[in-house]
Picture 1 (spheres, helix red, strand yellow):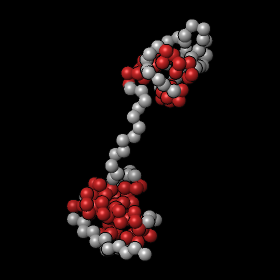
Picture 2 (spheres, one colour):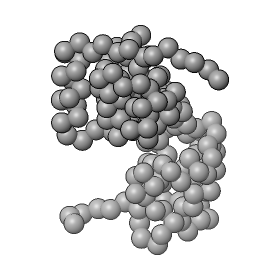
Picture 3 (cartoon, rainbow, N blue to C red):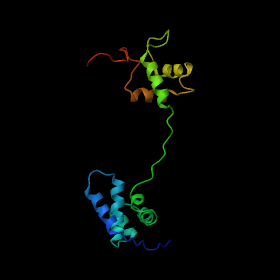
Picture 4 (cartoon, one colour):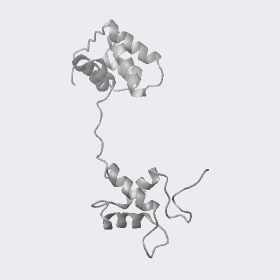
Length: 159
């Protein structure tokens, strides 16, 4: 069994006030509030396993919150580092070109645009080097475009 040194956190008055204000304040992520409560309880002299039981977390998670506070400060203990996320498959210029293409008439021989046809035409017209159907579907959905319907995509006039 592993033994851990007791986590002794000393919160300066400024940090304690900031935590209490955070808990009294408006809408916050639950994980941020749980971390704030963990820091206050650790500073109050409770052990990591006690705090973990109080908050429904593991002792390891509580210790990590305390250690992040000691090493990197309050901001880092409460909030996660931003995650990079995936690089968008289409840049804004390519997106605009595809939307403009869909808002025009379909190619000769087709009654209307389909997601598959939009993907093929975008590559054929060299708007993008390559693009998949799902990327096109999400793009059209985000712009509330439904080119496969009977009515025209472009909505004109007053509503």
